[in-house]
Image (cartoon, rainbow, N blue to C red):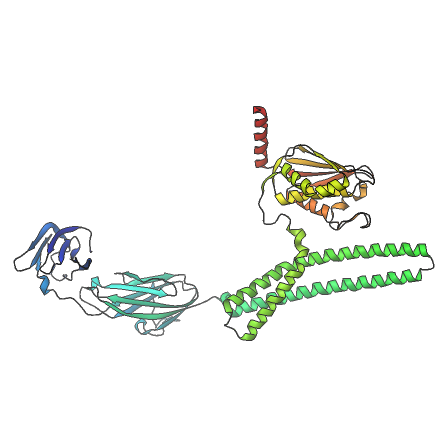
Length: 511
């Protein structure tokens, strides 16, 4: 309907209902339940009619009165406009300014009415099309439908004769528009024009391939240098082993001296192997990021340009992807140490439950060593559940492992509240640690005893140090040879912990 206000309703001889409104006259078909706005535009007294001013004469004429008089018409004599109007694009604008072929560096090579294709830069971000239907009977009632294929999902319809688009992505689009006459007869043959938006240079395929080649080349250089360094270290170690072996052969006349030199050589070799392992770890960590970048770019290009390049290019990208996957598998184990606490959020951790779980896991070891473990009530803290459990477990395992011969291990776990920290103490009656080694034991791969005496990899206490530092604390040991060891570490108290402490104190008062 042209308007929601109905002033009068009359039925003609054919059963149609005619309605006068505040915006013209409309006809309603009761069978089809559809409206058609009348083509009575020429000579109409006004589009606004008066309430109740309607009359049907004996001759079938319809009269409607309005603010400037009345209109009379016979519905049987009204002819429908069946002319199908063509539609043309009459103007093209960039940044709301009309474009003509005569301008310097114009996007149009000929008049817009003759143009079938326009190429634009990604910087030309606001474009507008104006169009018109060549139907001149009550042209203000001509309707339009348009859409930009590649951007719009549906047709936009209405009486407006202008379409504006902003910030289109690089690519190809087709603008289509069609129109109807004043009686709603549509021309289904749309007028169209092709739009090409060129991308910035950093989104072009050649730039992406060049960037990938630079990344791959840089990665290859880094990997080659790392491998060469490792190979050089291996050669040095082999030479040193050979030199030590020659010395041992030459020293066979003095057995005691030969054994001593062999032991010293083995210690030196073990130390250098440890240094090589640490070097390999650092190298693998440094290689992870460029390797991930290479793999990501390869996956991106394979996904975006698969099938668009020749078969050799696709094969080369597959080779690069396979090589990246193999390298990932080679360095995976070397990075476990660096992942403590990653991809987790702080949570409430009940240290009493943690300790119960650890004691259950170590039940067999505790029973075999006839160990006695006692503890006081432990707090609830904000931390990382698995890391706290690993911290408790490593300290208990060390206390059981480094025990005195013919002595049952005893471990006492206590905690005290400082100003901003909880201080935990794991005290044992083991073999103890010399003063000069108290800092050394927290360095990764450091060992104070031969593996024949005590098993281990030299990683446990370095894990403990990293876990404590992850929680904003520090760890140290108080010990002496034969006097046992007391491992102290702190865990930072935050607002959640303070709230928990307050609740516990209030509960104790109420009890």
